[in-house]
Length: 190
Image 1 (cartoon, rainbow, N blue to C red):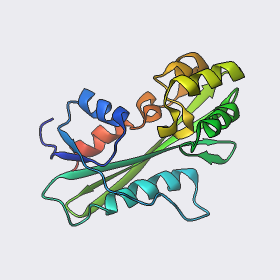
Image 2: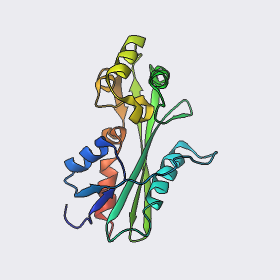
Image 3: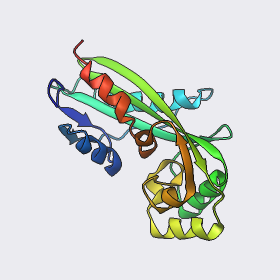
Image 4: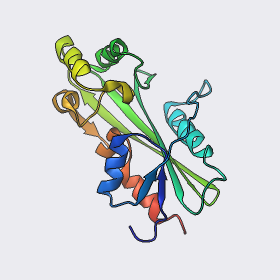
């Protein structure tokens, strides 16, 4: 895309990489280990942005004109923040918690460019139908939910059969609010 500097995507998420490719963005994946803990008392939106910014800070002072793109996606249901599950059993528990409920998917994004941090977030509401234990256990056994906030991918079977509707951005639920990202990227030099 013209007028946008090369992007350093600080994420191993294949879904985020796919979204950037679909946007015709030139990018390179570069990873740094970052502690994803956060202080108590933050709202879910603040948590997502806090972690995204923390990821970007690991790159401060190491760039040559590129823009660093970091993101963190969390799922929130009934005031409880669900990150990535630690085990398959934990994934089953998370999906049982989401089953039959409305939850929020929040993605915090940070763009680091020329020493400036641009933080933003997006929130989508996801309506899950009641899932059977068999549907949940089968999904966890056949897919790889351990790298996904809330233990599911919207583009995978559980998302395709379980989600009744979404209020908000589909790509945000995938892991990157492309609509907001595009608007921020084209205004980087303004």
